[in-house]
Length: 237
Length: 220
Image (tube, rainbow over all chains, first blue to last red; front, side, top):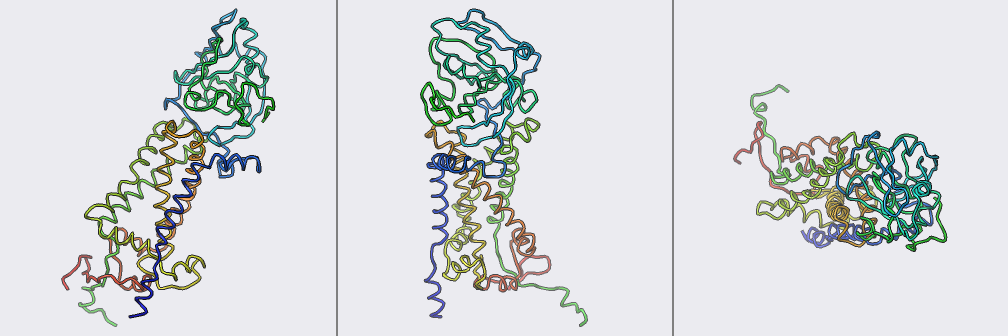
């Protein structure tokens, strides 16, 4: 009897401690997960997400919850604003221009990263040359077929050789959920800069922050975390 | 030994393991967990599945199931009907020194288990904590605008890590349940043989019930 009561009094609130401990791990993960990822990224070259099975795959985000369905033969890219030759390009027009192939990592600002994504498209600089950017132009504003997303690049950023208007991904037409048939790809910046379902390029005289920038992300989303208009130390992934 | 008529009207001494409220909470929880897990797979392996499955619908099912996930547990714990739920929650919380040693030695130290053994207790605690963490991180992922920008990344990786833990815990739970049919049946009928309870949960002293063959309690 006395032994029983000793055993009884020895009970410890392990459940509460484990519960609170796990909850604290979760809270720390939310607040410091970003820093931990960056630290691991420097040490291992990949974030925690990439170490999980399937972690090096795309996750599909959509602002509207919808994925615009655009038939390739109905696709149009409208170039307008401060240009000498406003123009509207079809997919065939884009494919007739000199093609650029590149294999780049796709890095999302939320931590996941997909290595070795094969793209084919037209250098944005080529389209701009064709359009004839007028003096005084400062930036480009990009519009999306989803009528929700928008993006911006400075004229200088737009002339980086690896900024392309992509129509092929992994050797096939860019799929609907990846922003097809035509999307922007800015590999030196986080994925939100690579606007999906590209419908228009407007040459403008000031930076118009895009959807994600209005929601808190840097206008200049360089992969190395710097946020200046130019990146003196480009991380060519 | 010949079978007599008395042994055919066999009676078994059974004990109540899970009442109606606990069973309902468990199975509602199970359905929601499975829904969340099945919808998580195409969302996580996004480019595997593409738009073959209607992605937006899957996302909405995942979101709403996740938002409703805590409801069965909260309602069953807090309502006037939750007496057994609450007393089992207290059992899960209170551990003896021997149980702590059992977990530390990964079960090598033999103990006389209470209604729940330390492994079951650890599973319950992990599940409960995971619900809270996955709920909060999921909320941040959906409504990230209202939180610091860096929290979205933290919530993403935390949601993933706990989800992997949940997949492992659920898999283990299902395997153990299938390999202990009597125990699993008690989550359906609520009752279990007193002999089973004495063997697997020696320190647990529930009120015995005598049942007739049909499984309904008889007056004692």
